[in-house]
Image (cartoon, rainbow, N blue to C red; front, top):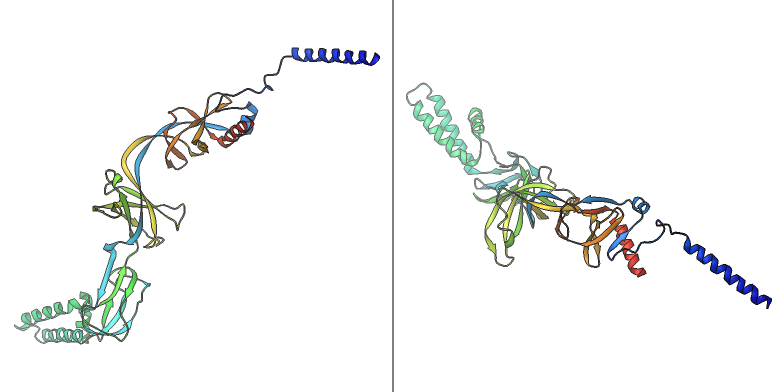
Length: 364
């Protein structure tokens, strides 16, 4: 009986304690708030501790751009062939494939009976002018000398070299083959000691200081692209580096197999970093500008529904919003749908909100 009395007394004391606790008002800072679906509500301390920062969506003026893939080639205007100017025999080679040469540099020397014969004709005409100086026949002799000099010119010597020949009175035993441009020897068909016919191909040179990026333009982009557009070219060989150029040609016909039109971008290459044959991506930049709604690219998160952002709906509340994105513009990204200008999104810390939302989903 005594034990029953003690048990009843304990129940009475416990009930009184529970009633008193119920009468104490709850601290709103400690009571969890049930957030609407798709919304995360944090305490001010959590916002500060999570490093959450916000930024408003804003519109910027953006030039229209077209992306195209292609390959690098030598500028055809800076490629030169070197042929034998006379029949003869190659006595010496001075340049080989892969070597860089300057304009006027000696590539080879050729023994040519025809070259020797024309030199002899020039020297005979010069000697006749010297003998007839001051005489009535001097004028005719000078005409013969000029005719002989013109016959020598196709062999390649410059006028000052012909003057030096006349002054020396001695023929040059070998015909010098010189580089017509600065560049790289792409191909050499010359073999020391080999006989060559007049007009035979000896060398092919190219100047790599300017290259062509031959890009493939799709049909949908043809209304946008125009010669003269600025271009930026990127290549896998130099990640993060951009090479400026200019679109100089849009092809006149479409390739039936690829359904693309060739575009040609002139690309300065002063340091030789770019090599013909490299694959490139070109971004062509139009002079026409368009308004684009943008937010920081860091605000965008991938979620089950696709790409989302968190829109600030209160001092410490943030609501998930699906969006459609367009071009990446440096540190910003184009918004095609889902936001309006002025709406404030979480630019830093959105991953924390995504994690909180996923945990809440797991809890539910």
